[in-house]
Amino acid sequence: MIRISGLSFKYEGGRDDALKNIDMTVCKGDFLGVIGSSGAGKTTLLHAINGIIPHHFHGDYYGSVKVNGLDTVDNKPEDLAGRVGSVRQDFESQMVSSVVEDEILFGLENFSVPRNTIEKRLTDALEKTGIKNLRERNIATLSGGQKQKVAISAIIALMPDILILDEPTGELDPQSSRQIFQLLRELNENHGITIVVVEQKIMLLCEFARKLAVMNCGRVILQGRVSDVLKKSRDMERAGVNCPRVVTLADRLRDEGLYDGAIPVNIPEAEKMVRSIMG
Ligand SMILES: Nc1ncnc2c1ncn2[C@@H]1O[C@H](COP(=O)(O)OP(=O)(O)O)[C@@H](O)[C@H]1O
Ligand SMILES: [Mg+2]
Image 1: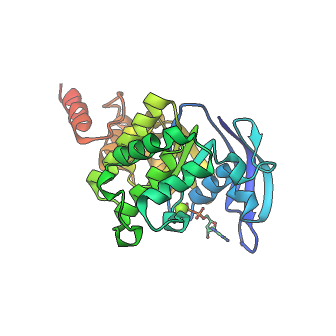
Image 2: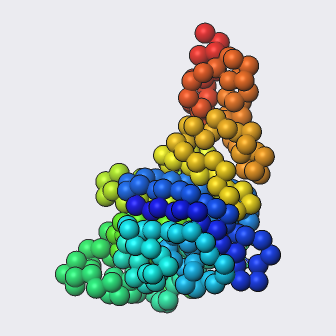
Image 3: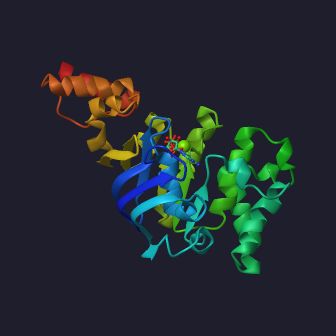
């Protein structure tokens, strides 16, 4: 569980607070999506959860973040790393090895995963992200999307309680992006891993996440179940988040008193909505 209370943070040398008085609880087993325009504070929020803030980035820090009861101020990212796995936005800077399998082994060996389970963890992780065939490849020769999958494999091999991902599909095509979200769902549903993911592809996010947090100028302006947050599409647009057209359509229909059902997040659901109105 992640409990964030009254968290404000200003980067050293920064002009404004990057996070402003954030209160948020992420329960065990949640699948939370975080959205917001560029500069809203999404990456900073994730840094505050995995302890990179305040340990690597310094600044003015108020409030508290507790991860499974441990205050991140008193526990370094390395100490939390067995519980919290992070795939950073600049995932390439996270990589330490030149060959794919070494990258994944590095983490497994560092976290003293029992020797006899290492090979299985390695092959499972590569299989889950669909890159078994890349196992012996040199990372430098891979595409951006393939590297992204390597970074994700290295983290899921560690089977953390909480998985934090910052725009994990940024370099991926629609099909691979879906594959990653299907993987996150599998980890969430079958292994109980708590997921916090920042994602720009809002339709994809809404289909897979169960909760949403919308950020704007360092604040969390909306949070809750996906269907409830989507009902506030005007607030989201004001925060610079481009809502899917089906969502804004549903919202307008609700305003007109024509529709009272769930907000559709894809075309088939939108079709059902329109049919229900047409009688
Ligand atoms: N290392 C840093 N030093 C100073 N300011 C920073 C630093 N990193 C981010 N910021 C500022 O903090 C704010 C939030 O940034 P960020 O969390 O990266 O937003 P997002 O991930 O939503 O795009 C921005 O105004 C950004 O310029
Ligand atoms: Mg970011």
